[in-house]
Length: 250
Image 1 (cartoon, rainbow, N blue to C red):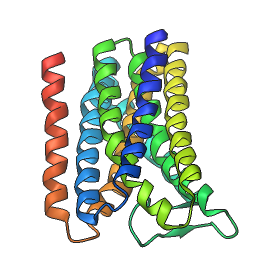
Image 2: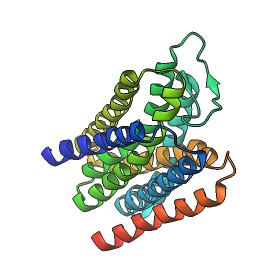
Image 3: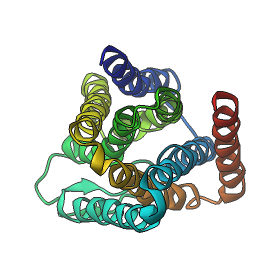
Image 4: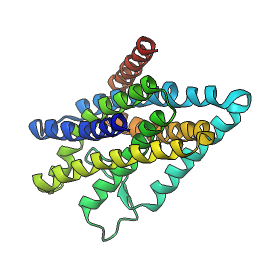
């Protein structure tokens, strides 16, 4: 339990570290943003496939494929539902933002909600990994999420400052999004710990939410400013780093 809590704090704290770096480099180019988000997408993709979806198949036995596919789609559909119902700014970075049901809602809240929708499933994924009982695999997932949280924390600072949000409130928002990942980690851990029967489904569910975020938000954002080639190779680098880590720790 102590290890889970410390890991949760580490995952959430990585976002805060990234935010502090974002304050140091306030003028971040679209190219840098797209490449770092591409790298983050690659890390998340590997964590989802290697750390969640494949273990779901292993724990599920012969009929595990049905449970895994169902879990992936349920996870994606749940996040899609949240995406439609919760007021937020659909794109977290960049000059252009697509608004969803946000009339009269404070722009600070919109930023926080956008990042929360992104970060909560990451935290759940880290927690589910620990609930599975495979500490090395769980640490790989959590480490990957923390690794990609740093550049993500960096790139959200400049848009928030540019929109007129004070530095103090910007930092508090970043810290709040890190806290959301801590909460998500504990939710995922306790949900699986209560009943190992739901473990294969929970792993696939967490993987599905991450796949949804990658495809719906991260990749489109990295391809929106003419830097898709660099972002694509950055994605491959992030994926391969996680792949190598998985082999070395396996």
